[in-house]
Amino acid sequence: MGAGSEPGFMRPEIVRADGKGIRRAAAVLRRGGLVAFPTETVYGLGAIATQDVATARIFLAKGRPANNPLIVHLAALEQALGFVWMDERARRLAEAFWPGPLTLVLPLKTRSVISKLATAGLSTVGIRIPAHPVARKLLELTGLPVAAPSANPSGRPSPTRAEHVRADLGDAVDLILDGGPCPVGVESTVIDASDPERLVLLRPGGVPRERLEKVAGVAVAPLTDDGPVRSPGLVGRHYAPRRPLRLEARAVAPDEALLAFGPEPLEGARVMLNLSPAGDLEEAAANLFAMLRALDREGVRAIAVMPIPREGLGEAINDRLQRAALPDTEATGTAGA
Ligand code: TXA
Ligand code: MG
Image: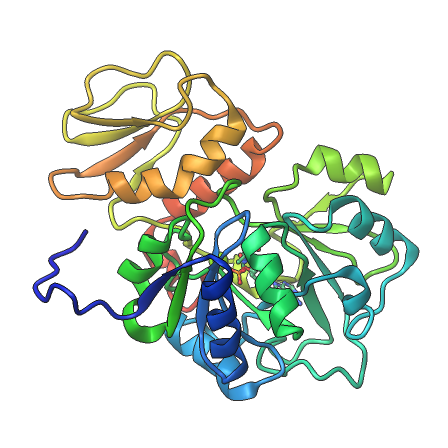
């Protein structure tokens, strides 16, 4: 893809995520480099979270505001206890959903070695133990906490293929591990578990709210718009293609591309992709970002999106679409992630 006018000159290097590739990636990380790697949700842009300079490079590469903290990835639950306090409630969630697409925001231990840049100076940190075998192997080999936001420039759709990372971040990354398409396709669910009184859903994601509530035994309060901003990355336009999105479409204009869902796509669009012809929300989540990117192309004035049910992964899908559809002006001065 792209106008490769210089064949053979491909920076950064995309490396197959076999044993050798993963060992190389671990070495690049330990030397302070930036490595994009696959997780089950989306590709992450990793640096060792105890290294200030490497962590600072993540913010530069993404154009990410410094007040937006990064998620810290670990290989195992026991490792988390070195950095954060976990009460019984947090442990129950962790044991049920780790490794997997859940991030828990937890109180940081005071003498933690995590870079203050990674936590944006907060007294909490988001911890995630990914399930993707490549991410797991990489984390085991480095043996250190790895800070990794999604590997997209702030505000853009998250990458679910190695090629998306190269197209978007280019040589700001030292190495890209290619582990194929990400199976879940939307980012992790972020739960603030730092307040013993309540659990707050900061971002719907790969673990549906219904499953979390069942394990937690309590309702997970959604983040309200009128409360204090608890998660700096969750404000304003985000995940957005360049062309405007029109949601809940019941008809399509000839100059619109259609992002369809289900067995009866609307008629009349010149370009159409279907998130899931079978109407399956897991398939739709896995296709979401790649299809938004693919429809964001010349000759298309806007992208019309058919209604998508809100249960299960539908909550995360609708969340991403709504943020992507916000007018550009609302992005000013706010943080994409
Ligand atoms: O699935 C994922 O979570 C991916 C993969 C790579 O693991 N990562 C990801 O990271 O989506 P990022 O940085 O794009 O989104 C993390 C979100 C941001 O909106 C950030 O503001 C929020 O989590 N967050 C991180 N630490 C936080 C904290 N201590 N308190 C509140 N929000 C936090
Ligand atoms: Mg992000």
